[in-house]
Image 1 (cartoon, helix red, strand yellow):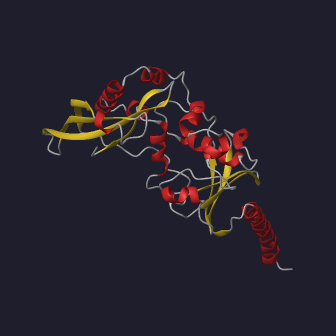
Image 2 (cartoon, rainbow, N blue to C red; image 1 turned 120 degrees about the vertical axis):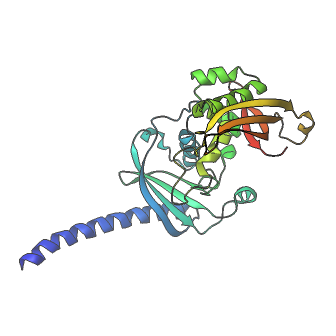
Image 3 (cartoon, one colour; image 1 turned 180 degrees about the vertical axis):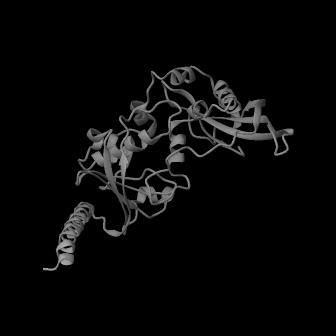
Length: 300
């Protein structure tokens, strides 16, 4: 045996071992998905991610913990609880699936489904289905939603994953609807992004997880950037509750018309004023959390 071959042969054997190892992983994922009548059309991505140390969300924090808490409920539906692996690095595999999402999700999310497999040291510890771009949450492998699995709506379920001892949480929980709106615009004026985010419901915060996300991944890593660099001050000119919309909005929601003046410096460092009108919906997502904003629109 020549020297070149004696060097190449061991490297070839190592490569084949790893190739067979990865192939076994794929077969394992395929077998699990097939057992719930899902079939893989293609693999989207595979990567490592570190799970958060816990699933309790603090006011103004990016909602990654809520993502994992929600999808762990879906995973538990098939007997896989990955909460014992919190704080550790795991392997994520994302697959395109041939089968559409269940009927109860189609009107809201469309039809395409992605299978997510979570592994630790080669063993599957979690699995669920979600839509991907614009939707971080979908269903379990056995095609159940959060309500069917936990017997709780979002507002009831999220209550267990909020840190009510957080100082910002305590402060906001005592505020009226108008105080929440004033706090939000005041925080923006001071460039206090954390406090401004804390003024929103957790459900609204979670929309940032998948808004315009790269479909090769599970979620966006951070809140979208808000350019406040040239903003000097934001003043609320008028704040009016639109009581006539109570019959249109969801039960428990209130809506306000908010007119603001934003003072900013342009590229020539000239102070200018911009007047805008927004329509803010507020609700009590949880009783202990008090009022939070469910979104800001440009029309009632």
